[in-house]
Length: 335
Image (cartoon, rainbow, N blue to C red; front, side, top):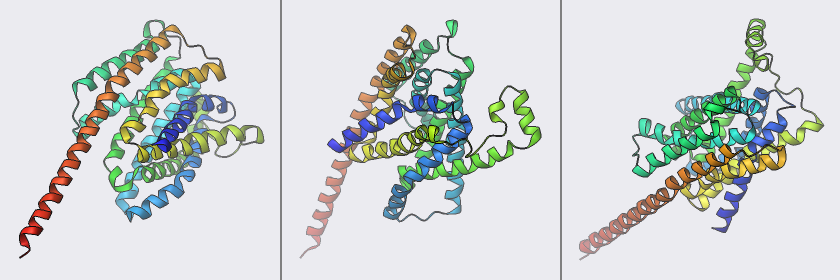
């Protein structure tokens, strides 16, 4: 349990400083390039753990599996994380962190639609309170943050939730680390192909004229220097690689429900880190929104753990019952 708590603490630290590190690094790299590099590094960091998991599951990847990883990689890296990075460019890091943390709201909705998972009364209340918190932070009547940045951040949250739910359909087969590692690497391969297309003159002109010059002639590795390498290592190795490693370790040592504390603590800690490092103010509406999101998360989190414990208890009872019946049958067979 002690190892689990340490893993949760480290994962929370890395995930809560993600937007700040990306904000600092954004001045040295093209935002799409930074997305490519950090997920490439993060994916490579996860490879040893993924190999171990594949061996333990005796998993043999087929063509169908390759297609699945291509899909999850595209949704996660190419769509969600590019939107996320653009959100960081146009919005304060604290706002992006809080809005992205609400992806759990959309996970519930997608899980209901795609997996036919039950939605409980406490889940509905949690969603309503969390959405209210988002609206208070966005403050549409007196919006101080960039509307473009808010839209990018919300698209990132929605598509990351979609990636999460699609991943659930095969997480038992692959394991969480393998699914994440290969999704990252396939997503980077797809992103590299798309980046090469930005060098087509007509495409470069179209992006430049539409007010998105950052999408024209995107570099892959140029611009990496001694001054910018530290930030890249932090977002690639620590945030993306070790952050997910400690998160999966937390799930192994505790439970999925307990490990999800990482994402409930992030909207509280990220604005504090942004204030300390970037000097981003915590406004009154930001504070009110964070409190609402914490309340919404708490409403969902506590009953979720109780349901998980009840489910585990039922499974244990069934297992004991099956063992007892097997012993009874064996005794009856003996002369």
